[in-house]
Image (cartoon, one colour):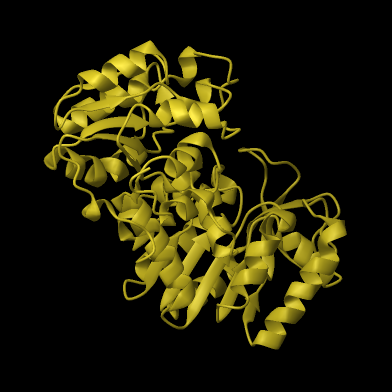
Length: 400
């Protein structure tokens, strides 16, 4: 972390601090229904309040058109929830860089907090438009990025502004990058990775990178059927990518060459349809009927996977083992989650996305060592990609 400037090095008193946070939170009827991401930003916000900074927070929410205000994507619910958590009013600007934003920013006193409207209401945000970046930068004296979940995006609020103001990493950003890079560079061993999800094509770079790091790799989710097809097995009506069997076979060969134990299912839970009330069957991967699709790992596989996890000293998990949102196909993901949670001696790192939803659904979040807030960002970091939002914090622009 030495290459990233920390907010511990920032004298924020009396300064206007533009802070990129990730308040892309679910809402219903104008109320935040899961404030996890807001909670994770609190240490940075409270530090800057205590230091007398004048904070101008900015965040995206959802996927608006980029043509102006859209009520369903407003940051108003996030501002209300943050006000409750801080015990002080968080003023919401009516715009992103217009007159309201400028007025709200200039009116802030030491230790006060404001939140801009959704930065993606302006179509220039995702284009990293230099004029938009300058408009954002003009609101403040310094910049802090605490939104790891967007660090893989070269947007105006994550990269453009960092090139124009003295830039620092918030505590969440530092924790995310430090934990994930530490896992990859110096993991406890045995180091086991658990990967799920629908498609091999989405995870092939992650698989390739992890095979150079891990002692064992567990494969679940629908992408396991592409591996099984590569072994010459019939996969019935399961989701499969025939064009990716060669790559899957190459990964199996790489695992063998690297001495990595590659775990594939030996049985699956199958049904004729992906439906909550579908009749589920336990079938061997050698005998999947043509009219059935695999929708979860089977009980024998779940036991094998749980045993491998039990013996690990470091576990990285990204992606469910099946369609865990539906009860008949949730047991494999639950078994894996419970095995990870039960391994109290191991470093257990959850790599964002559906895996986070699963551990929350099963009430196991507090049993994990670390839960990443960035699914896409964590995957790109694991596969060795440079994250623009992180790289921008390594540039010293003091005095510009």
